[in-house]
Length: 343
Image 1 (cartoon, helix red, strand yellow):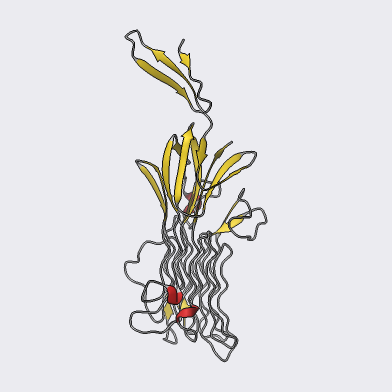
Image 2: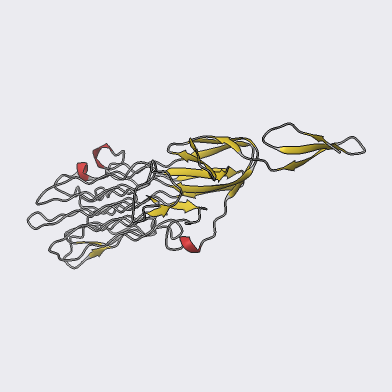
């Protein structure tokens, strides 16, 4: 019989072979960890990271479930060829998850994602910031994509939720090939009467595409659970497209996420609404999607600035309108990382 350890978080026995060599037979014990805001329910211990930090396991080992939401993209800025602001809504941050609801995107429900085994050690957690819009943006064009959220689960496993796309800009086609984003931004205002500017595509395993923009208004950004709405051509009214819906998750306290269609779920990573350009006819900016998306700005007859994505939801920012120029571009909301394991 070996000598039993007195470590309260793990049960194991030290055995000695006939040659005197030590070997250990270990049984997994309850996980003891710190990092982020720690919340205990009857069934789970959950760590909520609203900023970057470390998940530190100081005892035991277990499989850890995760929900990772990247930062949302801002509304579209100005195109390289002009100073016109008439832009699509930002895409919601990408969502990857091992929770029962699964990750975002049209391919999310078909993807099998496993919880990650974690033992004693320190694990880096990066929470992506939202793309900054308006005059405070470090980008000369006054718009930015969101930033990635990343967790290093082991030396061989690093998972990344991709930042949401910046909204599309005035009279500008999307680049080819498109950069990799979580959810796509909405297409910008097209100066051509019969033209359409498509929204950005999203990562099919993390988010949806943005809606199309047309003459008069811009498309809504894609969300984790739905495509952004396209602008109806020719109006009137020429309203901005609504942002795509975010994805809802159960067993999340009301301190996190936003309300949505189901009262038992909390929602993340919605798209921002597209901006609207009509001045004489009723024309409104697109609504932000449920899950933290900001509303698009509108030029008239009652001018408004775009709304920004809600912090720690990964919501996209609203698209701007040309009357108020750069101040009307909404910023994306920062993301969040949630880790949980059984009590």
